[in-house]
Length: 459
Image (cartoon, rainbow, N blue to C red; front, side):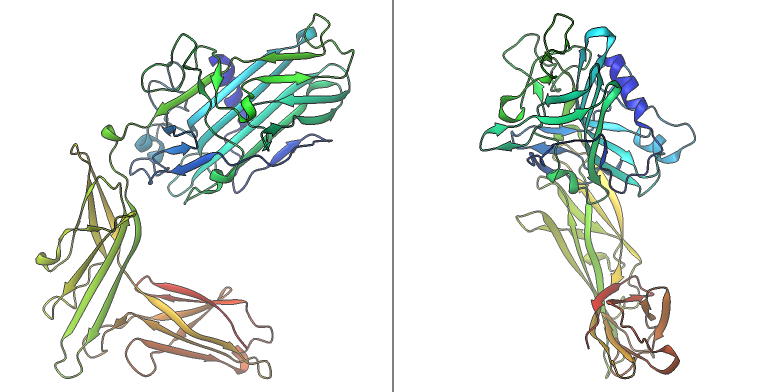
């Protein structure tokens, strides 16, 4: 079965752009949407920048399976692409898997039917590249059809309604791969789209049937085996053709198998560096009108495993570095306060270090930006005038240091916003040649210090 898997994945085509994929190369399809059976995802891995794990409603938690050479052994993944920095850093090529389960059927006359179920890690443009990570769940069905007619297909991820799972029904013409269906549902960061897709819960080897799954895995892809976890107890791949059609070579109009090639590595938290997901790092700065002194504060929020110890560093005022506080939910926080001696030295980045209970560490630099808020965005119908008022959290006095530059962006057009009134307040009025006869639905304000905000226009 492993050889089939290698060919099947190779046939996928690594250069497909995955913005959102839903391909059905078939007519006459009756297929209700499936139940969402994935329960959650882990933090982003500091190594490959995919979710550290995915979990299902049965409590199975799987990490990317990257053991071995990717072609033999317990895991299947594309080899490292020499010269590709992202691939070399992550340890695999264009694709890897959190989980997969494949089944194959031999049909009368030399025909073939294949089922591929998988939760995959890939890249939007095909080859590995920074910030192009893409995760998706896949259902692929390919069947050679000997005689035209109505064919019914049962597989473990059928839609379940009140405990019942109706088969997928196809009105198929005769031919090789006449049923050829691929359904991919997924997306880029924050990698939540596949949680409501068709894939899940994970099929795993039936624990009551020998041989048993190797320690640390939900199956061995080199050995076809019975599984559990399918909707409605459908732990098989079955095809039923029109009455009188010989599908199995023995006169039966159906073929079925309950044997799957299963790949999946159980999440090993103890030996996995803790993930860090920046939530926000913003600074606030003011200049005292009487003394001329400038002070600041930096607020930093990150997500990390609840068992980790998390610390902040990179603050120029040494006594403001140190442990971050857990909020008893999912986020760590720390505020650093800079006195007058350091208020002009807000860093561009701070460093967060997460340490697991057994000493594994992840270090990540996080950009520090100002907090920009649009307080007013109006359009006047009679004149086409647009007025936008925005505030930056950097309220430094121009006499103390450089103030942020704010820019109003409407589509491809950009307009500098002068500071008007109190420090930190910016305003621009677009009229005359700059007026808009048709109001923009939204406007965006960006800051030279990294902050931004988007708001709807009102009239």
